[in-house]
Amino acid sequence: MDYSWLGAPAAQVPETARTMLGWEISAGGVRIRLTEVEAYAGTGEDPASHAHRGPTPRTRVMFGPAGRAYTYFVFGVHWCVNIVCGREGEAAAVLLRAGEVVDGRDIARKRRGEVADRDLARGPARLVVALGISAEANGTSVIDGTGPLLLTPPERPVAPSEISAGPRVGVAAAHDVPWRFWVTGDPTVSSYRRHVPRRPRNS
DNA sequence: GCAACGATTTACT
DNA sequence: GTAAATCGTTGCG
Image 1: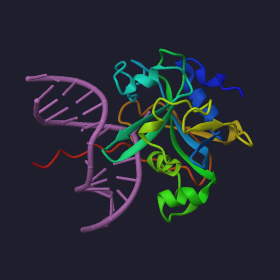
Image 2 (image 1 turned 135 degrees about the vertical axis):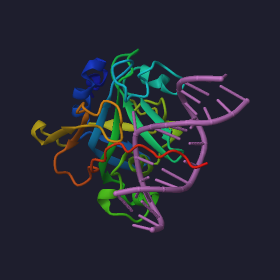
Image 3 (image 1 turned 180 degrees about the vertical axis):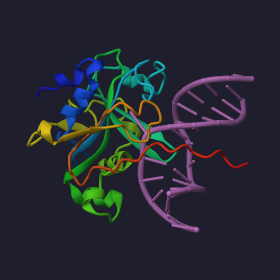
Image 4 (image 1 turned 90 degrees about the vertical axis):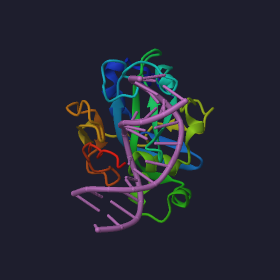
């Protein structure tokens, strides 16, 4: 299996993200065909990236070799998962935003509750729940089977003409860069919502 | 040591 | 459409 494209230089992350569409991610008996991803680049280049100010204990894994998972906790409620890309020392990563459950749908539904098929993995945190992973997947490989996650090639590749690009979701900075990619017309793709500034806290 | 905030989702008006 | 939930990471004193 050829995973070398994952290790392409950070400057080519958008291309890497595009390539990842249609690939399948499996964990705990559930297999999901990726229909929506976002690219994140590294230090200094991408203000929207967690790693844009350099390595921290949390973002350490993003600077490691390609093909590992980077999971993080957000809003005190949800987990999201990335696949680390780029060469070692670069902080490139691809955020898995949505997908279609193609195997283990009953297991996914058990984790997600009674929702429509297309909603099982529509959204970053929902996808993580459907896969049944969280903190323990952080830093593990998604290509050699040593971790809970496994990334496998598409049964049928997605044609370039079927791929759309646009601004990333929920990101205040760099909203002018079209680094979100999705399969055109796929029902499992989440609808775009721009970043909404939170109101000041009550006191 | 402490306070602010976030690559979101869900429920409620 | 808008608000609340909820806590680890980060940045600053």
